Amino acid sequence: MARDGLLPAVFSKVHPRFRTPYVTTILTGTVAGLVAGFFPIGLLGELVSIGTLLAFVIVCAGIIVLRRARPDLPRPFRTPLVPLVPILGILICLGMMAFLPLDTWIRLAVWMALGLVIYFAYGKSHSRIQ
Image (cartoon, rainbow, N blue to C red; front, top):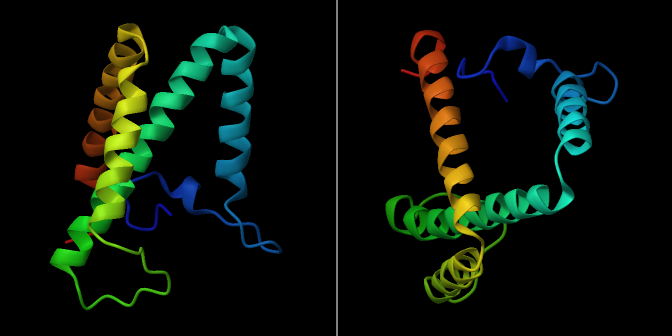
């Protein structure tokens, strides 16, 4: 994580004994704790729900894309009935997302846009991927 230069080097530090990204874990836990302390639980529940469901949609779509674009990749775990299962996963997750309030969708769009701007603005000048 972060070895590609798309995130600051501090995020790539791993604990010498446990080999886990401890700086990132501490920072994420601290920020999550502060956010949980200052925002209503209902709002946080909606944001976590839409974010998690969007992640599942992206993973399901990624399965379909990788099966077609990179059929040669080793797959220790194979999804059965591709593309049926991923398509159903996408539809079910999008269906559940549809029932979330409009303001949750707006927050998702704003946070995604902000995150992408920061990620690509930083990554463009620091990337080691060429």
